[in-house]
Length: 150
Image 1 (cartoon, helix red, strand yellow):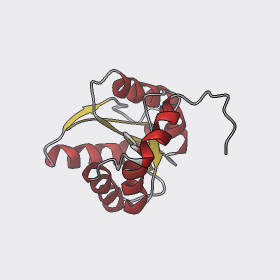
Image 2 (image 1 turned 90 degrees about the horizontal axis):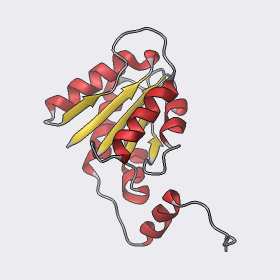
Image 3 (image 1 turned 180 degrees about the vertical axis):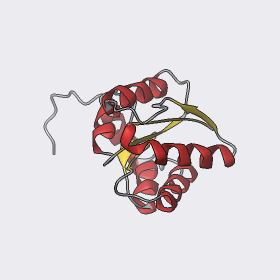
């Protein structure tokens, strides 16, 4: 699978470890940066990751920052991207199964490498459930509606 990975400076070490783990698992990893500890703005890297999802150059993404919150917000600005902030494998599995998430986001200050690996394993091994979830996922990419919630 082709997977993009991006972070900010706070998550540089986790990004490196996760990229190595993905490559060892046979995945083709596009490292979108950063590549050193110089302070950067996470939205720039989140937008780049979302663009790679949107243009189809990657199938999945891994977004990392200090908390995972900022970069996940940035990724989710692109309607083609569905980033889920997770901290344990059940959330990662449900993000794929119910929400067809194509990006997993994690916080380097909140999660260790072994838990990050477990989350990635759950995320990458889970298929989208489709069925009743599909209409909901469709609304995520086209949120503007005049219909009132039931």
